[in-house]
Image (cartoon, rainbow, N blue to C red; front, side, top):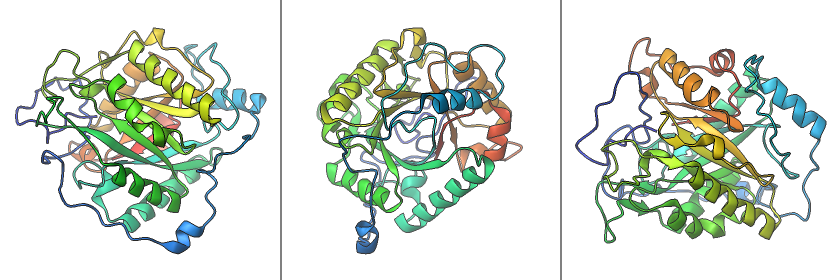
Length: 355
């Protein structure tokens, strides 16, 4: 994700070889927009069967033969030997990946500047998400699509706040609103964290009541993990494999404690230093790990970033981010279509995020 321009007035100028992700796409205030998005209650939609959020005593058994076949399919003819990733554990029953492709809308309900999730009125946003889901299903009929809402639950900001950590935790009532919207779309939910001068060990446990729900998953953003005390926005932050292992271990314990299907853990990345020691990342049956290419720019630039930081440093599954606005800033002023993404990349991204 790009340096969030709303964070600080002094934006770091990076080489054109690097992608900037764009979590905000323009400036916001300390607590993002103060105006809260009004969410109408649709009793008919809420009454509809919601199988995603129901805790079950058991989940559909894993078909290992199909799982292996889909991993090979998603390798997209890769001949390097990196894909599918070798010696990975089979997931627990009820795993989403690679049986479905996740297509997510990203953002925050307080702000129209941080992504499509908060930019449009709820009904319009959900209708647009439905349209993207259909497009991906048409582009790849072999892979069903699971819609998702990817919500920024902890936002890096320019004001240090009372504790000097430069992050703002969203109120639980806003997370509740996202869950209501997701239920209407039969979507899963990702809670995303930008720790700034805090750390993932302090922020993740505060969301446990939501992560104990079967339909709620997690995202961690190295760009705003400022381990050296630099204020967020002045340079790109970093996570180490140890941080990823802490999160996956925490999620794995929740899966076992609450008898849940595997959690999906999304780790954003668009530079090498955003994730160090990737070979030390531990894979677990309870967690499906996605390395998400989170940079914006023209198609060729995005392709290079995916190749160098996602394809060549394999972990488990891959993701790809598309920006409605920033991807079209430079010539050829074109955001990649699902068909183009599927034709360009090895392996196929199994998680797609729109901002």
